[in-house]
Length: 224
Image 1 (cartoon, rainbow, N blue to C red):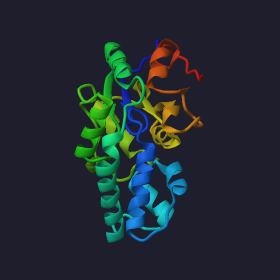
Image 2 (image 1 turned 30 degrees about the vertical axis):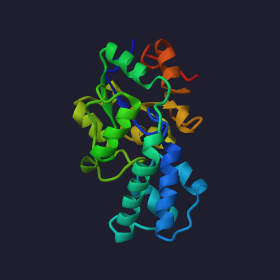
Image 3 (image 1 turned 135 degrees about the vertical axis):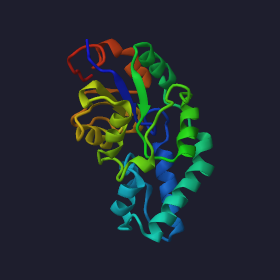
């Protein structure tokens, strides 16, 4: 059997079907600054934090007034126009309950502020299960930098080989890999496959239905 003691969960795309919504909110924020950035430019970068995404598509750097306006614009558009219509990914709560039943500690790996995290966890119906999470104040850079995963490991008080991450983008796999943490990738966020993932499933429900054959069920990593 595996020696995992805890799980780090990404939220957006993994537990909540929100990646397209984030992309739309960013496009509107860029438009508000008079920048013509398309959905097609932004969508492949969802999974990165704003500190990574904004410079990539616009050249605007973190710490500038323009960056702060864009970040605030994205947040306002997302919370008021997108958040009320989001839905949980299939099987999100059932998966976390099953993992808790196996005695695993659970933590959310995020750099979002408290209000946004709270709203997303309520949508996923897991706010009572994911009571611990990282925060923006604990990281200098977001995914694909390793800061979020490092912060989660510190909170858990565990070593990298005792923890498994669940995410939905190549940025999750890259971020975790830099710390030595293995990742289960869920396709429901829009990424079909990521190099280096320990296993790939369609959704939280699919992962739940294959737990015994997953990295949690044996010492060997397998990929469906």
